[in-house]
Image (cartoon, rainbow, N blue to C red):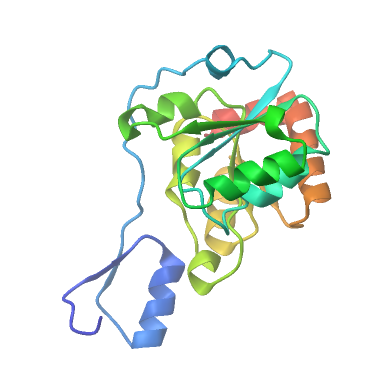
Length: 209
């Protein structure tokens, strides 16, 4: 890394860490943001047979551990009138499907598979809330600033995100959602329930997105 002409990173804290760790001066921060285009929301309720009374949580991205999916599945058993729609594939899909069966949550989850990227934000825009619950399991995850965070915002969907520094800075600065500090299924279920029941707060976050 010390021989590169330029080191490109997507977050300020990544730059600070690498600057200190490798004694670098040639770092450029370039946010990895989706291109803002006209969005035509897909009716997820109609497409997946979800009732109007149910609120829709969305996760998009690779299905692997450390992304909060297991925690959300466990939280679903404490919730009613909520459907969790997952866009993506990955090595942990089988595990998550088994976990859904074990927690009697199969009827509350839609494994929708991969969506072509140029159509993804249209699907995202059909949800009520986007989840970006990265777990603090490594230095890389601690500094996470995932694409999905910005994709939710671009689609006008409020975010529930982990209490990690770079995500927290974006969510709180622009008031586009809420940060979850307690990472257990009960507190997460309560956070979802309270936010989804508060239409005024949700609409404020949507406008800010």
